[in-house]
Amino acid sequence: MSHPGRRTTIHDLRAMKEKRQRIPMVTCYDYPTARVADETGFPAVLVGDSLGMVVHGFDSTLRVTLDMMIMHCAAVARGAKNCLIVIDLPFATYSASDLRTSLETARRAMQEGGATAVKVEGGRRMAPVVGALVASGIPVMGHIGLTPQSIHMIGGYRVQGRGTAAADRLLAAAQALEQAGAFAVVLELVPAPLAQHISSQLTIPTIGIGAGIGCDGQIQVLHDILGIYEEFMPKHSKRYTDVAGQMRLALRAYHDDVVAGRFPGPEHSFES
Ligand code: KIV
Picture: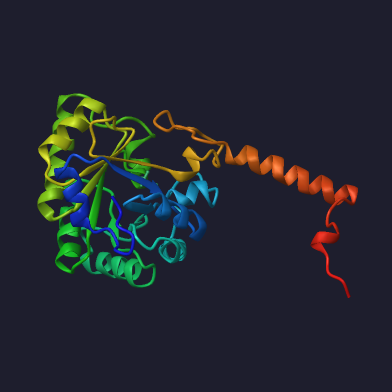
């Protein structure tokens, strides 16, 4: 639940889990959508590196840079006054083998982007990064299961954690992130029973995307649920409206008005 006038904190999210209140999250990439998400009462928004695909038209998240993330996050921060603002640290800007760079990336994301938390992709191997950032006062959200920044290692956008060994590894990864100090963990493309089990084993909230109803919260990509991104519709998403269709209708009407001389009318014009 967001509290007008007071920005949601990581402690509020944990309290929501304790009270069994589901945590709704959505991605945001700009000022107007952040304003609407904030007004709607989302306790947290994610400036996801999915913006590389749905806003910039790349075929993966790998070409997203820290400067791009900071620019989008700063716009979101101007629009979202009450939400916790989580920013994705982009591909290859953080790693356990270079904690100094990881810290510098997160510093820029927070100081220049105005984020109030960061998200990193990866399981056990990310625990030292999470630990180092948390020790510097930076709230960190983990992200396991399908981790799009590792798509070339994984070999495709497919469900993760199938089979006993893989399921055990995923649970161990979630626990390692919790122990390192993460305040929440995203579970992406994980079988629903496994996601529910992981959620029951953690004290921090799990935020699912393609991970079933048993997670503590859910996140979706804004452009998928609004029907703005038409190239691909993931099975786990639900289209709540058809913004691209509405845009087509409106732009067609404007285009035709100009061509036919119906716009601008006297009411849109100025006397001398
Ligand atoms: O970048 C993103 O939008 C994400 C969500 C899918 C969790 O990481």
